[in-house]
Length: 187
Image 1 (cartoon, one colour):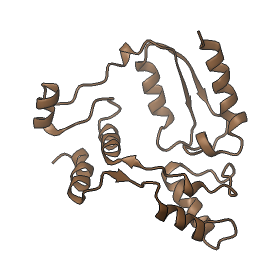
Image 2: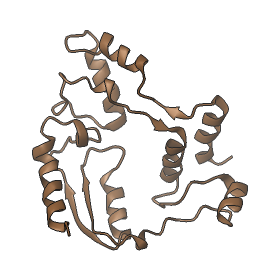
Image 3: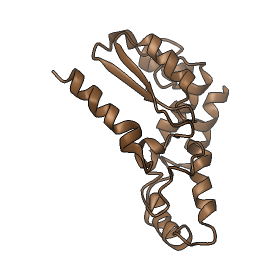
């Protein structure tokens, strides 16, 4: 069994089809243990940082983030992400194993996505502290896409993956630029 098959094997064996679903239990944990003033609030904050990168300066501690994040993900989505990490920046379709690949794709290895077919203008926004989408990966992607109109690095050194949605200053640091680019390429 290849190393990238291990997550798929574990997930299928255990019968899990969703990872970290946003459910009543997580909301209850957040309400009971992670509220402002709680003795373990710092632990709750740091669990998120372990996934996305550390940035306590932009964390809105009055907002109930764990009631919304993580929102859950398909176990197949996480397996595919794991496969892509193992494939040294090859952006390919889901690996079903050699027999499954042969049945679905007509070849032993999954085919790469044809990024050269992406014709729309693409603007890439990234940060140095995003552990799930590091700048090196953004560089590789920008070289493979044929119509990149810009790469924009968020100017805050500790801006992390969750900050793209939840940072206190996200409008100033990111959204104003996103809107500017959208207006520029709106046809």
